Length: 249
Image (cartoon, rainbow, N blue to C red; front, top):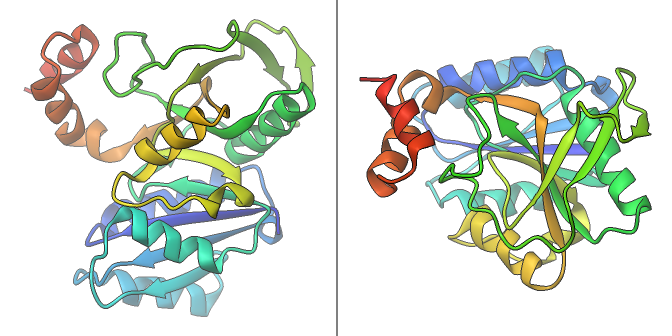
């Protein structure tokens, strides 16, 4: 097993169905190369029944953890990790549709290439299709330890250096879909989820990388504007956030 994709969910069946379908379509991995571990935190909208039907009929390689209460994202993530068989773990929100073809295959290849290049890598993540800009509140760039690097990834997932069409940025934390080696799960996620987790590894000298041209579509922020609206309220000076917020009015 190469990759364990962990999704925590609570009463978001409509989003979850689209999320899992996009993984099957665009992960770039065969079904025997990944598993999807869904941590259902006592949903009441039919989520558990749908997951059980999918697993029973073999539609997707799904494992189910059903909890009797909503214990939060961090603890839910740890429940999923305890069941994971993969050498790599993916933290993947329940409202994420993949955009880039060979999405997870490319992230894994990039992770390995960075390690071969001598980087201390914690996590490698993808970017919102909605945009990637330095003044975007969700990105919160940390101090860079070395200059930006440019990589190229061909369609079959192999590498060539210095192709201008693939840019990765070194950040203090990553976004709603990222991968890491299972060994990094030794540190608890806790209430701060990826913010505190990525930040703690960053403080220990490990870098988190965000790929500009490996993209996902954040369904909730893309359709309802909820996430963008919260960011606009919190960071009124961020022109990127407010520009996107205006599109939902």
